[in-house]
Image (tube, rainbow, N blue to C red):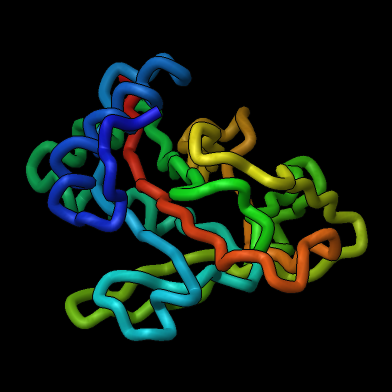
Length: 202
């Protein structure tokens, strides 16, 4: 799926992998324009060693953007062009894939959008040095239906739609890392990369 040999190399990821992800999202969604703007690499072992830019898996159910923070991200990134872009449909789509497979430890699980009610989303601040973002934490409900893809390989991806301005579509994808009861006790730490994109349809 990628020509990048080292997905821990931030500069190469931004220069090469972002373009690959943009082409993938554009081809799969039919968006007129796709812009990759951010990414995370996750590896619990490297994170514990304090390696710069590497994080561990996120182990609480959440959705990366809210009704307020998704349009704000467009304004943050596109300046004077933003208001024109916001007049048409846009979506925030994360492209998640293993760096190395199969994923046995802490695979990603997603919640079926039709089983989530608006009252299940709790706006939650994320504080950074230069700004405050906002995500939705997910309140537990016994009717939530969860799914995951076991033993994902490095040539497989998940697209997570974390916001859609089209109110007739599924608009959010709550997700979390989970403990897979089928994992070996000595399973390698999950290694993954997620790239956030903005897809514009107008």
